[in-house]
Image (tube, one colour):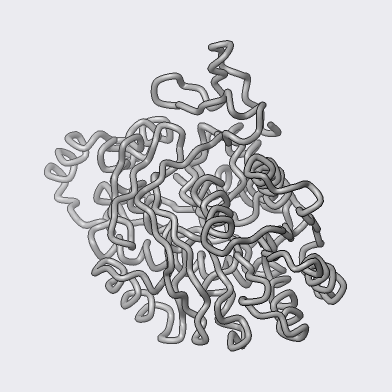
Length: 429
């Protein structure tokens, strides 16, 4: 049986002409797209929407003729917010289902679980969520924000616009919050914030008792200095955190919170009347004004229901998926190595009115947006930049400042600019 996915464009076209097979449904082998998102457990509140986004995008692409004349087939699995299970499900997708690409993960600990599998089997993962950086795998395209595209600009907004003098760094206890906060602690100290004015606290996934922690944050401001919270809290723990803030009578005027993992989807289940004025930093908000965003929102509501909202990781999947489609068409094959090469320099309009560009370090150039929570669960955009190139290795940790990632020319994700050597990459760096 001829595998049409592996044929070059001209050969494939000739085959269709000679056989009369011109419809996508005539492909003997559909192009399989793995969808690796938690549909149960603590992260289901955030990840179920991303599964639905992929199903919509795949449906739309099939309506437009598929890819390389073949229909796309979604293969959906549920790793159930169980980090080791992510690795098992990724292996199942690549070896049993034989998917051509995977779109998935939310937490960094789940991505770290998947990395050894995806690298061993030379799979291709598109990861759509903001993360801590300090990683560059040849098998992953990072379509969410690196720290310089979210955490650093949000901190600058606190310092420059809100005059925050004391910082509470509150996070869920895993790699993304801990690494991000290491970067932010170094950055804050570089900007003159004393160590004793930085309060750091971590809680487990699903944490619900926030009374003591909120009281500790309030106590920071007893000397009259302005306190701000930078939140890397993930999943349904955010519900308890914001409820406790409201119960303690803490408003955004008193202690502003900027969150990196709270968007429209998380707020849709909350009474946001007491959260007005608190902030989030993303690369997209549903309230962004552009024709492309209007069309995306309309399509989403028609697909998923009028009450459903859009959010930043959805846009990351939208951009990543369309770039992958274009790269496959350019390469004339779904072969991972060929598609990887075709990804460099891919451009696709983002939903905020600009253009996303895939860089040789497997990160996107993206705008940075700061939004204030409204009482309807949407955001007023109070700050927006031009496209900022994502940086795999932060400039604010000495061991990382000398590293660059360039898979196109240097074929290296950890190139040391001082020694001019490529550090050997492993899945646990």
